[in-house]
Length: 113
Length: 313
Image (cartoon, rainbow over all chains, first blue to last red; front, side):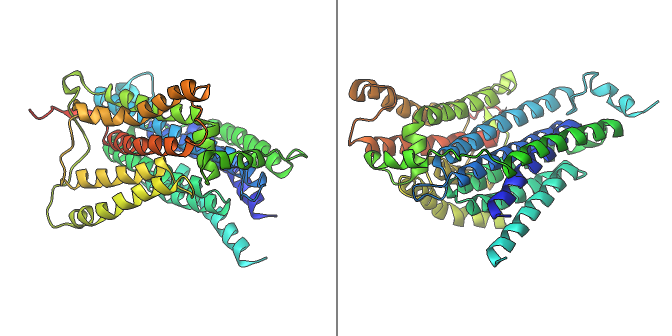
């Protein structure tokens, strides 16, 4: 197995891990982190496609590489916005929860009975 | 099996292990620390994939500035963590199966790619000499896909408007809520006096060399932003209030100049964002110089967060 294939398999693994964290982790901040992990996995897949497209004396296809750079920047902008929203939610309600029943019911909701 | 391949195997294993840690860690703070380390290791992966430009962006943005934002949020939300409702075991198992299937499908595509490999590298190289640039990635960003790059800068400005609009009404136009540690004679003070002269030179060099070598406006601007944030956190420079006209001008300067150059393309070269023959490189350098400044200021302000104090009068 070549190093490129190895990193190529790392990408899907990161997408899977990120998606799992996004679904199962109840805290919004952890969801944001997991979503970023999912994003980096996707970027890595692009990187492997770029590396396999190496031609004309280049180490990789520059088009997917440029797309990934744009992607990283847009992911950062979205993360900054998401964190600001989350902190404002915390400021307003005193809790950082996506639970629709509201922060006051959160303690009851943890109780299985 | 040679040493380089062993290095790659260890690197891939480390990336995967830290990613698992980020998802499994008990508290958000550990996850964020893991995320910063993960970003730096990922930058090494990008180097191994011969994508130096991406490696620089990942280290600067993906790990550095994002990490700083996440650290700030994690420390503020620390108290709320125990109240979170956890997901039940059946749901976890179902999610695990779903995620494993998706990862397997993507992995299958990596292991068994379509027969013909599609690449735009020869096309990108064929027209690069006409632009005067020697870095093909800069060529893609500023010539072939310049519209994407312009919109990307607009997205950053929109994100800043979005973040600012989350301020309480009475703090609109006030001072961002970035915590300041004003303690003289600490390591932070020393570093914030030592690093900025070096960092500013490195940032400007990265933008300047970006035309021919890996680097560019974004990576350079991020280094400048990091230096600005460092000086503000150490309390050596007051955080500006967000209603300062000069500050707002600097935020839109880069995208505005890029847009003007793009519109000039209609008159001089026949279409939007086209460069007249022979003038591509000087125009791109002008746009990149303005973008470096704007990106530095915008990233610094995004990291500083929405206004949380009244402006000084």
